[in-house]
Amino acid sequence: MSRRLLSLHGLAVLLFLYLPIAVIVVLSFNSSKYGVAWHGFTLDWYVRLLSHSRLHGYVANSLIVAFSSTAIATVVGTLLALGLSRYRFGGRGAVLFLLYVPVVIPDVVMGVSLLLLFAWAQNYLRGLHLGLGTVIIAHATFQIAYVTLVVKSRLAGLDPSLEEAAADLGATSWRRFWAVTFPLVWPGIAAAALLAFTLSLDDFVITFFTAGPGATTLPIYIYSSVKRGVTPEIHAVSTLMIAVTTLALIGVQRISRRR
Image (cartoon, rainbow, N blue to C red; front, side, top):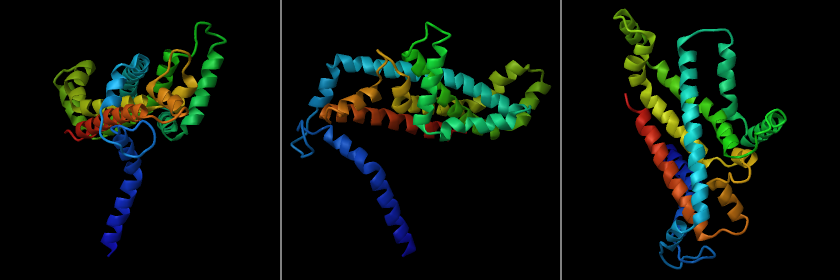
């Protein structure tokens, strides 16, 4: 009886989480332009997206921000994870504690704090203005924490005797990293990069506070369009974002399971 109740509870939770997503996906193929009544299957809304020139610019902005911030966060986060895993230094505990702040802090608080930081920096850097550059910096700020924690957990499972054996054979620290450490830790790095890319692509709150004119991303476009009314085109865009995010998360899981 208890097992059946647990199964029903699990099913109810899954329906609560994924039923709204399923509704969006289904309505993206609905031929009706208004309402939620099913009027037939169509792909017209996806075809219209191909001719939506402004939307192409928003997609390009999202990809530029996602790829750029992911590259920065992956490099910085991996180096930080290596330093925290391999060395003991004063303030190490404080650094580990601060890594969790971007993970647990509300997005709206982080967005406001970054906006205030950029506003303060404009007093000293006259060329600084809100745009894609500030969005990339803002995204990399919280992505670094995620990358560091994922890569650090991967490094914790490595056998340090492998690097010691390479050192006994005369390998330099640089050679040990590329010949021993990197091949073993690269699945963690790849998983962290995919996770960071997904977080950047889907982020709205922080982007909303740090973006300026000409820096509209896809989540901001969806938000502004929804205020004028939800259309099947929005359903189609949302479905495509769900598909990309799902594929990225599947990639994270598959890569992270590799030995």
